[in-house]
Length: 164
Image 1 (spheres, rainbow, N blue to C red):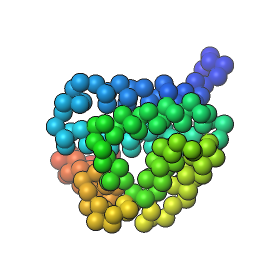
Image 2: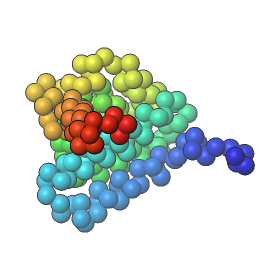
Image 3: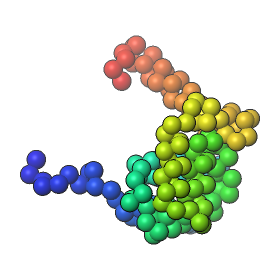
């Protein structure tokens, strides 16, 4: 209440936001992990720490050249963990990753891809470029199904309470 400015709404510098991803992805433990673990980490880093971070930056003023370079470094580090991490992602997500990874991308093209993802219909938000990947363990529909099943299991275990 005594703060003059709310720091939780201030945008974090991109390089600072993706630094943990780069550090962990390039770390010895992650590099030596089994392939399935590396892919899972890569997908999680991309989904939460890159895509999630990018989706909060819908203004071109928030995408300097250094910001775009920092994201490219994070995506490169993610790719060292699992070169095909992106195959589980839906078309709209892939379009954002492509814009973020494009060496010629401008702030406008990145923001355009982010806005297009936000407007995308069900198919582009859920189906990958290879339609059979919709059944991938890391795909959005499978992930949502597993979340729903887990919530049902928790409610059943707690005697039907729905306040969990």
